[in-house]
Image 1 (cartoon, rainbow, N blue to C red):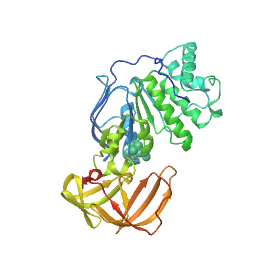
Image 2: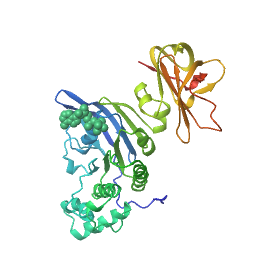
Image 3: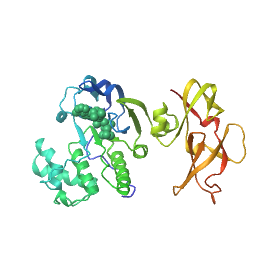
Amino acid sequence: MGVQAPITPIWKLPDMTELSLQGVAKSFGTFAAVRETDLALQDGRFVCFLGPSGCGKTTLLRLIAGLETPSSGRIMLGGKDITALPAHKRNVGMVFQSLALFPHLNVGQNIAYGMQMAGQDRAASMAKAGELLDLVQLSGYADRAVSALSGGQRQRVAIARALALEPQIFLLDEPLSALDANLREEMQVELRQLQQRLGVTTIMVTHDQSEAMTTADTLVVMNNGKIEQVGAPLEVYQNPANAFVAGFVGSNNLIPGKAQGQTVQALGTRLKCDHAADGDVTLSIRPEHLDITDTPGKNCVEARVEFLRDLGFEVEAFFCVGDERVSIKWVPKGDPDLVQGDVKYLHFPADKIKLHVS
Ligand code: ATP
C-alpha cells in the first residue's frame, strides 16, 4: 500500500472522545490484575499498551471495552461516565486476537452483521460494508467466504467489521500476533495509516516493543498490573522512568551500581555521569551510546570481546567486563577491526548514563 493523501473520514467523529480512567482497578479473586490506574488519553491518538505477558494489558483494554467490570474506579469517555454501561452501548469497536469472524457468513455479511443487529436495513448496511472494504483495501471481496482469505485479509475484515458501527474508540488486542514478520510489518503501516485517515482514538495491546515504537503516538508501558510510564515513544526511549522501562523499551545495558551524586561505582570502576543519584542503582546505557577505544581513558573500562554478530545494517558486539556482559551496536563503516577475544576499552559518555534508583 503506497502513501495516501488524507481523506475525509467516512463518519463524523464526535468532538470529544477523550478517554480517562480514574482510579480503575481490577482483581480476579485476590489477584490484582490491574492496580489502581489513572490515565487520560487525548482524542485521535494511536496508543499502545505495552508490557510483558500477564502484566494486565488485555484486562485494561477489556475494562475500557466494557467486557470486564472494574473492582473500583470510573471510566469516562467524552466527558460521560461509562463505567456501568454494557459493552454494546459503549460505541467501542474491538478486534480480538482470535479475530472471531463468523465462519458461516461471507466477508460482506460479517461486516454488515453488527449494523443489521443495530437496526440498519440490509441494503444500507451492505453498501457501508462495501465502503469499509474499500477502506481496508479489499474492494470486491464482499462475496468471498472468510475461509478463502489469507491471514492478512482476515485481519482487514476484522478491522472493517469493528469500524462498521463508527466507534468513538477503536480497540485492538494483539491483532497482528498471528501474522508472519513481513506481513506484520505491512499491517502495522496499514493500521497506522488507516488510523491517521480516520482520526479515531485507537488503543492497541502488544508485547512487541518495536511494534509499539513504530505505530504509537503514545506508549503506555505496563508491568505487574501497573502503569510504569506514559509518553511519546521517543521520549520513553530517551528518558525511561525506571529500570524496568529502560530494559523493556529498546535494547539496553542494565548494570548494578552504587551511586553517590554524579559518580557511580559499577563494573569495578568509578564512572562520572551527568545524572545524579544516591545508593543502590541500576545504571542503564543504550548499546549505540558506548564507544570502543584501544587505550584507557576517562570513564573507560577494560573489556574483552565475547561475541560479534552482524545485524545487517549494524554490528553488535558483546563484551565481558568481569561478570557483566555489555552490548554495543554501531553502523559499520568499512571492515570491522574487532575479533573475538580482543581486549579493548569501553567509553561510557557521562551524558548518556542513566541511573535508576533500585
Ligand atoms: P498477554 O500479553 O499474555 O495477553 P496481558 O498483559 O494481556 O498478557 P492479562 O490478560 O490482562 O495480561 O492478564 C493479567 C493477569 O490477570 C494474568 O495473570 C492473568 O492470568 C490474570 N487474569 C486475566 N483474566 C483472568 C480471569 N478471568 N480470571 C482470573 N485471572 C485472570
